[in-house]
Amino acid sequence: MCIDCGCSAGSSHHHHHHHDDDVKRTIRVEEDLLAKNNRLAGANRQQLQQHDVLALNMVSSPGSGKTTMLECTLRALQQRYRFAVLEGDQQTDNDAQRIAATGVDVHQINTGAGCHLDAHMVGHGMEKFNLSSLDLLFIENVGNLVCPAAFDLGEDHKVALLSVTEGEDKPLKYPHMFRAADVMVLNKMDLLPYVNFDVERCKEYALRVNPDLVILEASCTAPDGLDCWYQWLEGRLQLRPQG
Ligand SMILES: Nc1nc2c(ncn2[C@@H]2O[C@H](COP(=O)(O)OP(=O)(O)OP(=O)(O)O)[C@@H](O)[C@H]2O)c(=O)[nH]1
Ligand SMILES: [Mg+2]
Image (tube, rainbow, N blue to C red; front, side, top):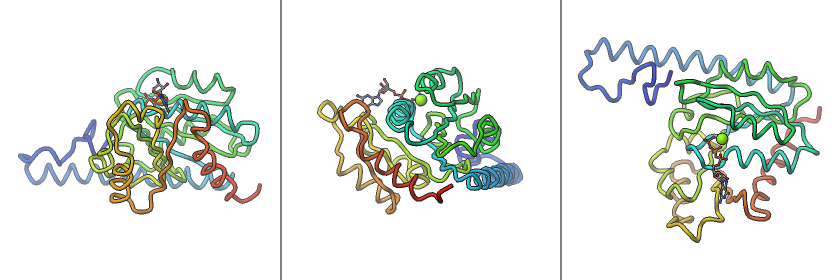
């Protein structure tokens, strides 16, 4: 259930003809849902921290390259770090199969009609792994640039991917996601010659929405195209207390 698109809970934003009582009730339901989610996210975070597991919530529109970037990352770094992946999708276990092919432990969460992962689903997903044998848990969220922004899963950082085929105005049009994220990975830089995409303007928009955003330029197909991402990731992993 989602406060932004009203997929189940119903949103007050789009209905101006509600009676005041209906609006108040809708808002109360939304507040309750988010409060419950935040409680569960806190419990997830506590568990992850107890085991010194870094958790990253990968968010983007469908097709920006979340799974591809994870496949590359796992293949490149799994000799040095212990990974597990939670895969969120409405339907299919396509992405889980792609991750499993790398040899890394993965669990698929299907949300059905749901347009985002919530902390409750992730808490149960975490039960599938032995947290004390992990360095990093990747959570790939449902492809959606809107609703996942509102749901804390207990992660350390949201990492938002944006590919250069999507248009440089996206941080302005979907500000909640880029405000909720700590990192923006500008992906598919290899396609820049074929699309109208102004990288500098995109960065300016993104920083306007979130001045603290770390922006990384990446390509999953170019040689060394993910080096800056690996650098950020390893820097972050090395910040953890030594277990
Ligand atoms: N040229 C190019 N293609 C890429 C890059 N990264 C991903 N792709 C392609 O983009 C398509 C979508 O990639 P996915 O990794 O499935 O995207 P996703 O974000 O996981 O998609 P959903 O899980 O459906 O939200 C695939 O055909 C990838 O091969 C890149 O850096 N450059
Ligand atoms: Mg995917």
